[in-house]
Image (cartoon, rainbow, N blue to C red):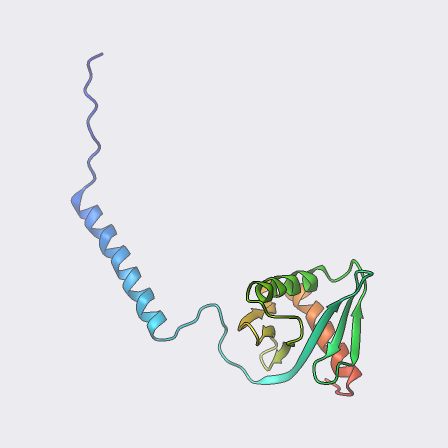
Amino acid sequence: MNARIEDPILPRGALLGAGILVLTTLVLVAAARLAGYRPDRPAPSAVVSRIDLRFADRANGAIAIYSADGGRLLDTLAPGTNGFVRGVLRGLALVRDEEHIGVSPPFRLTRWADGRLSLDDPSTGRHVDLEAFGPTNSGAFAGILNATLRSEGVHR
């Protein structure tokens, strides 16, 4: 029972190769960031429609959607519906709370020429590419945009 356990030895070439791979990756990522590459944002596209909106919680659990310019009620999301919309708005509201920004600045809902939808909070600089969450979830915001444009007399 006196067998000697030897320390495993990694080949020097394998260690050197792994080190070069890690260093090359770090250099390429740094170069991409310095060049302005933003993997979290799709390439720019033309705006098809854009509307600034305010969202307000109601006592019964509904969410009222108002035009940012005149404060006119555009649509109401019934209580217990539109969980994705509620989740996105809650996340953006948390950032506003952390930065001590009130509820009065509007959000910007945009439909792009390539079919994407995005929701931006100009007051915090937050951007949500809604297509990243799938067609059903982005469709909830598309419904809001379409209803809003119809209520304002714009047909798209």
